Amino acid sequence: MPWWMVVAAGLVGLLVGGFLTSVVWRVPRHESVLGDGSRCPSCGRPVRGIDAVPVLSWLRLRGRCRDCGEPIPLRYPLVEVASGALFVALAIRFGDSWELPAFWVFGAGLLALSAIDLEHFILPNRIVYPLAAVSIALLALAAVADGDGAALLRAVLAGLVGFGVLLVIHLISPRGMGFGDVKLSFVLGLFLGWLGWGELVLGLFLGFVYGAVVGMLLIATRVRSRKDHIPFGPFLAAGALTAVLWGTAILDWYAGR
Image 1 (cartoon, rainbow, N blue to C red):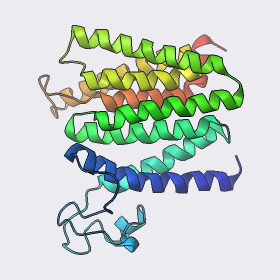
Image 2 (cartoon, rainbow, N blue to C red):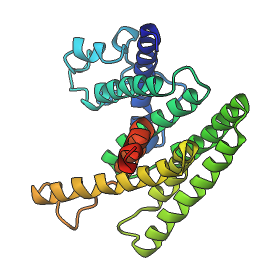
Image 3 (cartoon, rainbow, N blue to C red):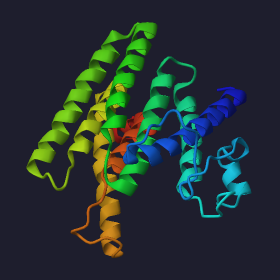
Image 4 (cartoon, rainbow, N blue to C red):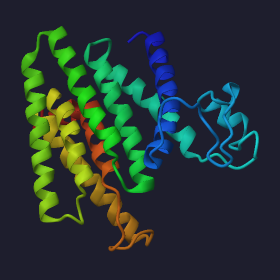
C-alpha cells in the first residue's frame, strides 16, 4: 500500500480507539455511548477538546486529569495505540478492497470486547449483537461488490459452525466456557469463514492454545489459582486476529507449501 494510506489507516484507528475507550468505560455501566462527551472517570468533569487527542493528550498530561489530578488509567492510551496498530495491520492485509471496512469493524469490536472482558469478565450483548448485525451487512456489501456470494454463504455457515462448537463445550463445561464466548464465536466464525475453512479451524484452535498457555503461566506464577476465573474472550479474539492476519502463511507452512 502507498505510505500515505498506511498513515491514514493509523490515524483512523487512533480516532476509533479514542471512541472505544468510552465504549469500554460506559457499556459495562449501562451508560449511553453517544450524546455526552468524554468525562474524567474520577471527577466526572468533561474532557476539553485539547485533552481528547488520542495518546498525545495522555502523554502531555502525564496520565492525570487536568482538573482533579487523579491518574487516568493506562488502559486509555493502550486501547488507542492497539486500535491504530490493528487498523494499519488490517489495511496492509486487505488493501483498498471492499473487505477492509468489515474487518476494521471486526477488529474494533474485538478490541472493545477484550478490554471489557479483562476488567469485568463479561462480553456485553450491547456490543456483540450490533457487531454481528453490522458485520453481516458489511460482508454482504463486499460479496455483492466483488461478485462472491459463495464467500458470504461460507461465512454464515462458518459462523453457525463456530457457534455450535463452542455451544457444545459450554453445555459440557459451563464453568469453563461462558455463554458470552459462545455468542462471540458466531462473529468470529463469520470473518474466519469468509477467508476459508482452514482459517476457521486455525483461529479457534489458536484461541484455545493462547488461553491454555497463558492460564498455565498465571497458575505457575501464582497470579491466579485453579479456582479463579480467567476471561476467555480476549484469547478467542487473539486467535481469530492471528488467523486473519497471518492465517494463509501459517496454513501454507503447516501444509509444507
